[in-house]
Image (cartoon, rainbow, N blue to C red; front, side, top):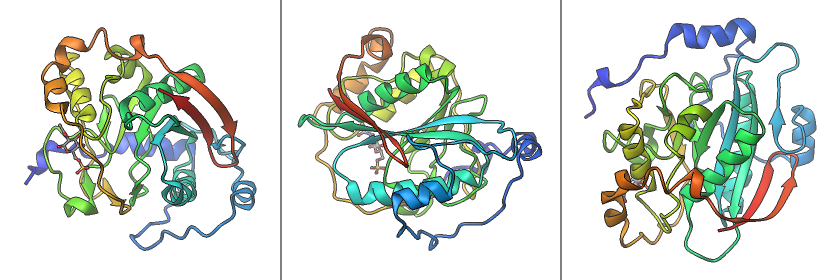
Length: 278
Ligand code: NGS
């Protein structure tokens, strides 16, 4: 069990400063409120979402601006549910946000970290100060889990139904995380070398340690997520070896060495779709 004092209590200032600027509609989600049978266009018009999946509250000045960056391949059904759910969730927080789906279109093993680097560069160019990296199979259950950046990098999804809402290990920094663009640039983003499942998030944690960036989490009660079921992935064979030398690669493997081909970018009603060949 993780001792409770390792979690940061949600700072009242942090949440209430959002509330002062923007009314916080405190509609509580529960694990069964995942209703997703809505058509994209109708939904986006009804919810004032701009093409490309950007939303900005109109009746107040939002305090936070976040890019939600989702690595993706071949999970159309999950994506559909994720988008509708996330727009409903995020709008209650009265933040300015945009959802980026970064799809790997080549047939090499999936490279989650490289897709996140591509999303980060795109969001940084668009001027977003806060990057939220998010798996498509995770749905946040508590509206108090604010999708904004804190002073320290934050692990958002520390309490997932799949792990019976217990953090599996202390340094886990995968699933859904938040970092400012400054923090992400400081550690040169993520490693581009992790093809296949596993290890890239542990490598990212090693980078935080080198840069002396402390990780924080909100309390488990606020950090609850529902993970959508999916097939297991083939694990990357030499990920432990890569991980062993994570610290030596930070300055040469990351944002500054990122190479890829952008195949197309399409603005959909609920998201910006960036298709890339890695
Ligand atoms: C670790 C993986 C992480 C992964 C975590 C949780 O073993 O990449 O499990 O995975 N590290 C290595 O493989 C070196 S989960 O059960 O959520 O799919 O994030």
